Length: 453
Image (tube, rainbow, N blue to C red; front, side, top):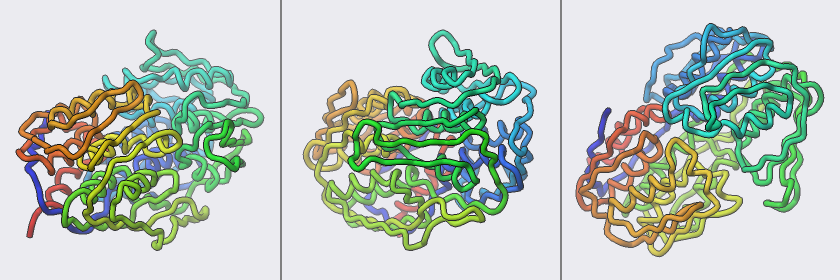
């Protein structure tokens, strides 16, 4: 296993284009693999997680052409997928989804209505994450799913004829919502998903772009019960083909945006990054804390042969003095991946930053509440762990001189590396191979941006 040695920095300037969006890359691989036609995807995230999804799609009968190796180059991820035209073929063995909860949960929705039995497994981390949250709605639709006694993978799926259902999400989860919608593609009748809080909508956008009969209804007030109601008509045949261009991942960009926002004299521009309104809550939080930050979709929107589907643009940020804030409620689902770096920003800001309503962090690649709290304490930060979040007391020196175990969690490794730039002494971030699941070039990009010329 690899370690990073992070030395304090007083300089962060430049322009950067981060690799392609992880959520979108997963979804494009699956849906282009299922659809009719040959699709060309540029900007695909060539990380371990997304490559595992591509390999699964290949085993299910789609033709995938491209250099399928992890790479940090944001412009190198061009692949071609020729879809199966609506029905996968039975794979030869278990599908290995690696570390990807997104891959496993979304794929389970597609496999549930195929005319064969299949199975999925993953690494130790993935096989400790809850999968009964997708098992329950799929079985309500008529699927037959077998999990381990603890409700985790490996997962066996016995393909069945499904019926559409109306399902209210018990937790705000784009993964569970997407699983049910993808199962609805092969179900009889309408599948209706009700989400109590707004979550990322990449799946809905792509289904619409590929010709699915899908409608979304929204109530006037955020947070109302039944806030979002998505209806998908079963039997829709997806039309793939054409060109798709994946924008940069705002979750990956958030590490550099946060670092620049907190560092005196820093100036950073992130270009060609996805700015889907349901992914930009981290920018809103930083702005509220006093960050000198602006973003624009002046680069337009992602337009394909199928129409407009994702906003894209640039983010510019300069160093400023920040103050603490409260992150809670409706904001949480739309920055769930950015909460570790938000906690780091809280440590660098003046006053308290309170994160609550975020119990979902406990069932990520690690228990992210406990791992973030442990990491902050190792840096000398005063922080109090709560069941659904934490209270970070900022303004104290970041002592450094410590060793941080990432616990195999890519977002913990990268968040603590950013905090190390502000420490009084070098730090060691251990077990960082996990970063290759989402951002293979993170460390080299850090060196580039903090190299004082």
